[in-house]
Amino acid sequence: MAALTTGGCRCGTVRYECTADFIATTLCYCRDCQRSSGSAVGCFVLIRRDGMRRRSGQTTCYTVKNDSDRTITREFCGECGSPLFAWTANIFAVTAASFDNPAGIKPSMAIWVDSAQPWAPIPCEIERFAKNPPISSG
Amino acid sequence: MKNLSGGCRCGAIRYSCFCEPLAVSYCYCRDCQKASGGPFCNYAVVPAESVKLIQGRPKSHKVVADRGNEVTREFCGNCGAPLFAKNGVVFVIAVGSLDEPSLAKPTIAIWLASAQPWAPIPTDVARFNGNPPITLGG
Figure 1 (cartoon, chains in turn orange, purple):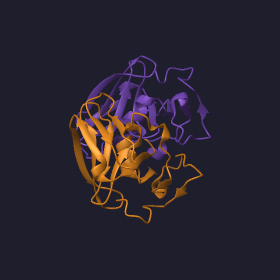
Figure 2 (cartoon, chains in turn orange, yellow; figure 1 turned 180 degrees about the vertical axis):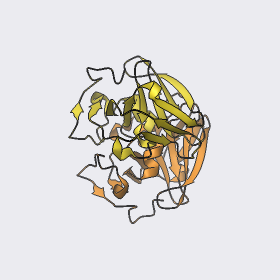
Figure 3 (cartoon, helix red, strand yellow; figure 1 turned 45 degrees about the vertical axis):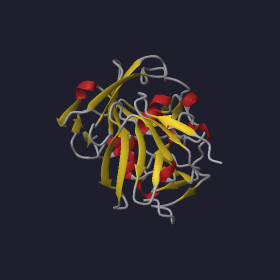
Figure 4 (spheres, one colour; figure 1 turned 90 degrees about the vertical axis):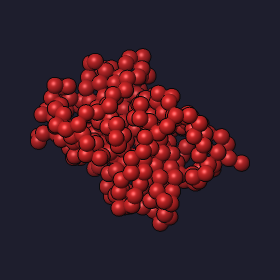
């Protein structure tokens, strides 16, 4: 049974509840995730789109072509800038650190490692993909 | 070393930095996790006066960080890309916003005491559970 997992932005404006099981958790090293996080890597939990319930606040959306030339929309809090969601036609993902209690999250794959900065740490114990994994992950 | 240049994802904001970074860090504090959506932020510490905005104007948000001090983060209000952060003592550039993040190899990791269990942690940097002896995280 899916546990209710809450989260939101840094300033508290945007709050959400996630009732879906986690499909996968990825560390993404693509250039678009680097820019969107300001760091070497993004971390996302993939869920079913209908498992996300927005409880308060409105996000700001920005849509762009990502490293795999697909349209991706990223949602962030317009007040504090916290990245919250990223989605394409095929997937819906929640930024791992936006959960209230992200300690139990466990990334199972590292993707777009071909785009990683040469100094970026990539865990040895998880599967790596040069670009997207075989499943449609946007 | 060449000048650093960078900007946001949508192109609205562009900047140039006429100074080599004093230090480049990983920060694992909870506020940086929220600001990036991922396991850490990467910052290049530079004198504030060395950064010139060439185009656009970031949005600012002030918050109280892990140590109790105020941190102002600046991001693009249109696309959400993290750009800068400052706390009255240091000014930093989000490394993911640089045109060439490969030029900004981090040499220290701070606030490891707050790191998520799943966070990738580099082995080739100096590590600190909180702030380093010099004022980087404020």
